[in-house]
Image 1: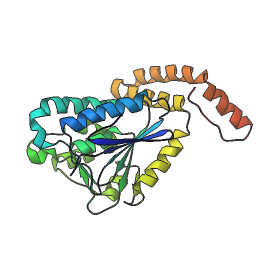
Image 2 (image 1 turned 90 degrees about the horizontal axis):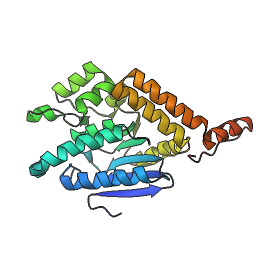
Image 3 (image 1 turned 30 degrees about the vertical axis):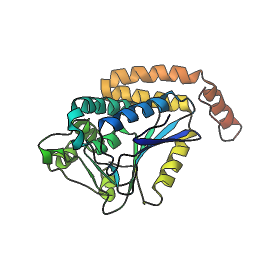
Image 4 (image 1 turned 180 degrees about the vertical axis):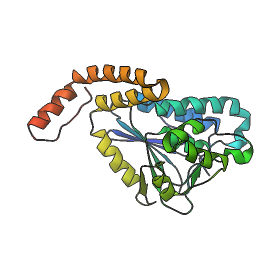
Length: 256
């Protein structure tokens, strides 16, 4: 499917969505609708095991909401909350390759991903800066930033609209890895390739169980974990994993 505001590529078991809405990949209705369709396509493609999100251009992952499209905010904002939550609960690993600054809804998108890799560049900063406009992070930022870095750091970043660079983001656990501009996608693809070789059914079961805990608590998380364990225990990948272990070779998982 062709998209006007983004680029969707597929490489083996990895999909890459590149936001392509110059100059700062801000979220208007057109980009949001394209993004929703691209996420649908990735979710329904059984060959895709990992999704990478990144921004087009050299300086920006995403600057958040497109204020020039404020007339459509009554559609765009609820859709943003919905899709960001959908990614947070995605049954395939999602990696944010943060190629430049990520502000507001852009950082909220990255926080919805399971992993974050960021370029170390003086111009690449991230933050939830909505209070500068008299509003608050409304696409999950208050919750997901707190979940990732803790209450004290989240309050510091949000209430003071603080922007931080890659080194500080790594130190507080906001990102998983630092990269450089020329190696970011190489590093993201290498990270994704390792994940893509893991057993897809088991990966999905782990993500669903952790998501169940995040959204519904320990009891529900344990229930979903038990259900997932029963499913993967009967899978061909389980047989392959044990066989490979006994035969002292690398397993080849098929997601069956």
